[in-house]
Length: 404
Length: 126
Image (tube, rainbow over all chains, first blue to last red; front, side, top):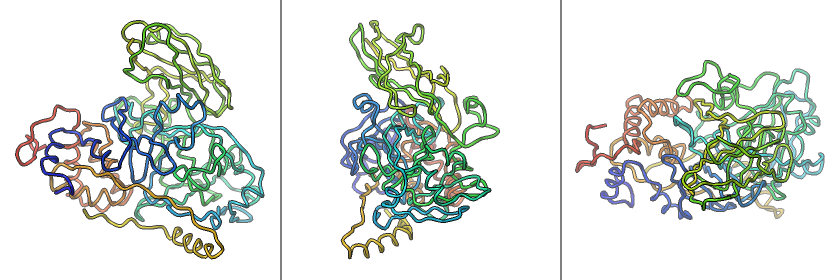
């Protein structure tokens, strides 16, 4: 078909070049350059949407943005609001919200349904804060081997922020949870692009919902939520993958039977095995909903192919788990033949990023850097990828080859 | 290119109406400007029109070009089938096959590029 604004020669050149290039994409959006994530078809434009610095853009409708790894290295354990990653499923995102007339509705299996304004949330319940990591279920999927479909993220679809809000538990107590409640579902203002597409909604077990850590949050790092991170209110589920952290939260429904919506019953499910994995390329017999993070560490100071000066080199990174906190990070510069303890940075809480650093002797030639975290609960990272068909829960020890 | 108008949520309209009323008292809704879809060049093929009409109805087409290179035909067939089965996309079986065949061909990616003939087709018709 004729493509507006492009010559036939350009179209033929694109075909001859095999892959559809992101270069034309970059020019069309006025992007701030491109990055090349270190996997095949890893070129992405850097795009600054309102409220955000230039971030790695995976898709535009809905917008999905990833934080460049260098940002984590520069900014420490707290990810700035304008750098925080963005993930949506549905393209009908709210584009106009009146904070004065916005209401969070709480209903279902409760004694007293509520319609709470933002002012009422701030005024009528104890304000709570927690520093917690939000990681996308498919963070790092681009590194999967063999590759799988879905969002082809690098390592940057994660972030750590200080979330401010009220405990879901306190709001549910005000509504009066009735006997027989088993789950709570959460629905935001974003909507499907067509009536046949399932609305994005998630659910938690009632005990989890009432644990005091799950928050209804309006604040992020001392400011209001950026629009793309869920303005004016989102769910915060410390230690659980970001799929549960429903944005533009508007409806909380207590249920007396399990929630069977698509995005719980059909999507975001992992193999029902201890490792949440199956042999590469195979399918699981049974699945369960994704849940808690697996302990993870990442190197933020170097990317594959970096050139460094031989000798002592500071290698830096971060680590986190699902809420016991990080006990140790071990680092190697020789592909795991020898290890040394990293120095851990400030402890911002058991749900936060924990920074680490180590000075490693780099030899002339190739050096394979590895980092392996151990949590306070004794969980550690595997050396082999725990493969599943959806590319979820990556926590293998990463290898970063640098050349000295 | 034609693109189906994205449906707007009733709640958003109600919210804007409420905001208009609130506007009488001085409050204003907060708004956000979403980006335009990127301009991508699609190798010429009758199936390219199907991609524009069916796929772009729900999401930007960068979803497609971001996928790993060299995925087999079965991958593309399964993904198109999922759009129909799980998301209710109205794509006939003939159209599904044409779209999957086309995407598998143009997203072969890192394979050594074959010379295109004068009409822009790959040798072997794949």
